[in-house]
Image (tube, rainbow, N blue to C red):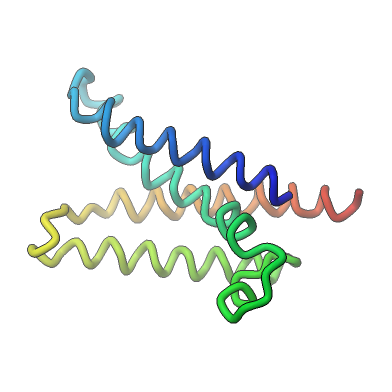
Length: 132
């Protein structure tokens, strides 16, 4: 599971960086595609949270690894709830003008959607690996 998680996180990060730093700055697309490109980093990034927790904290035993351990559905639920809390805090911190970023409710909504999808996908993969 750790190898699969590493693949998803690395590939997902490359896709997010491509969208953020290459595709979006060119502004080649009209409204529906431009909107999807705007929310894609939040959707994909939040989808990767459980996979990142598995890759970075799996098999480790220090304090933070114990909090983000993914061995059961309860652990997965905790990681997803903590991840969503951090995403919401990050989005609300963007209201502070010092950071020069923009606050958007769509980012929160699509972060929630990505994390929800990730909960079901990762949970299914986790149960499948535990049965083998």
